[in-house]
Length: 294
Image (cartoon, rainbow, N blue to C red; front, side, top):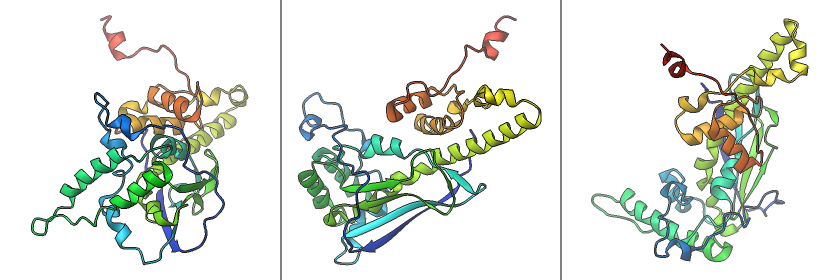
């Protein structure tokens, strides 16, 4: 898959209004584990790349010091500001929520791990490290007050919805006044939704072209039989930057088509979207198997 990002924007409003009605509160018991387990002898080491305390841009770690005094609510939204197409097919939010944000994702061990990184990362050659930069007390508050669950609410259009660009796709807001800083701390992670959404959007546009020319060439029977769903087969696993990119990008493609050889996309659809058979393939040959015969 060769994709170009539709330009996206994350805007926030600082206010002191009461929290609005909740649509999705990230206080689910999914993924529940205890800090004691993390520190137990023989336990698996912490995954530094799945530590929500560090899944942000470095400068955001210090932003709790920069908001105006008395701030209690940060309300942010995500949109596509424009691009090659006027419509956006929204996809990928559920994966990021389930993978990184649902359940007890904050623990004392993760806080400690993050602080060890920050002490080096923010250390000044002359002045050393400023203990106020990392909001350790606020993260510990999330552990003690919310059991390590993120006090935020997400509202979004249903995944797979086609939305004209320059419209809100999802919003994020803190539900605890003491955690106003958390909303935009999570921006870095959630803005990655641009990728599966862009793949899904481009895949849909390609599907429209295929359907158009099937109709113009007298092949409407292919469409009625569902054959058009296999006219753009995904071999993108080898062409993307990571296994995760293959998973979420490939899943975005499967919103529009049913042919794929990207197994990571199959796993993503099953584990994060509850779809046991999102795509299909065949026992095809390749150059090595053919040329081996001489």
